[in-house]
Length: 458
Image (cartoon, rainbow, N blue to C red; front, side, top):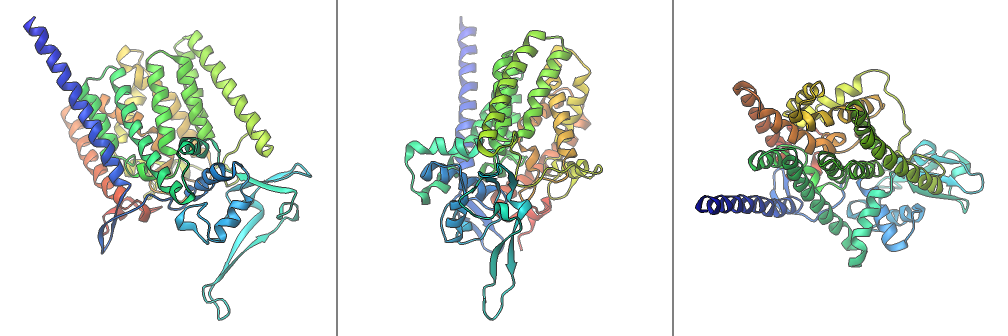
């Protein structure tokens, strides 16, 4: 009896320590979104805001849904150019490239705005001391008219989710941007919580699961992306829930979560496909059928919505889809100084090695890593086949959604590794932390900068 009481007290104490950890992580992530470190100035408080790249364009869809209840954006871009807050405070008065699909209602044709139009920015002159910008319309069919409307070239699921979350609060347009920042920080925190439960569900002890969470938060781009207005942390939460559901032997729920990731960005459809292929490889026919059915229905719903919105089955992004002509994208996605995964999270090499080894093993202890293998390989092939990288952003944006998987895989691999491997991993974790922490504090300044730029303080 006494031994049972001691054991219960120990379990209760361990649970309290875990609760304390996540109680600390939430304000820590929130503080990171509210602090900047400026070289030559030092620390200063900051209001969460969209920085650049695709971020302002996501904000524009959020504001259009909240205040105009429309998915059409042509008026929103005009308002931004006249000083409106639709794209965030940084873009007020800016003549932006439109990240939109142009649709001509009369002809039924559609085109990416960036493929038929461009913003001309002239240098300062005596007549225009601040310079002059204007839009050059190169295709009369898609010039502004009553027949032409614009919708986002990015999938609307992500900004629609944010707008749905904020709608009950009835924010003013000046409040939306910082409110979105808080929601995204909360999503990032939920991602750490999901990582812990994934690790525990896979058989890890509390200590190992806690290490996976700390690895994710302190030593990877997950922390900088907690203040990002990109969709990557939200996709990461969805993928982590998908893997948790798969580990819990709930294939339909896993497929639904994987489909959620593809709603946010179509590239992640390969994750659901990878899940099905692994179930087939393991001859789990019923699970494969359930997942295939759920993914098919979700895919058909997405195609139907996209056809209704823009007359095309897949909404990909603002740039035309082109294929890579050689292996340079494979190199860049892994080791390019400004965006390479192995540069910003060098410890992830151990995760990839462990996943590759687990693929050839059907031992029960290899189940989690084995299920990561095909989705990760398909995704690596997908991002390597596209002829452009992650664009103007911080670090390895394309890989941020997989960081929870990689953190859990690394901790599991180190549990069975020898001393030298653990020492090497510890050094790489320290290097990752030395990049991630200053990167989070200087996130707005480090778009498309090498990892070493986080240490330049002069």
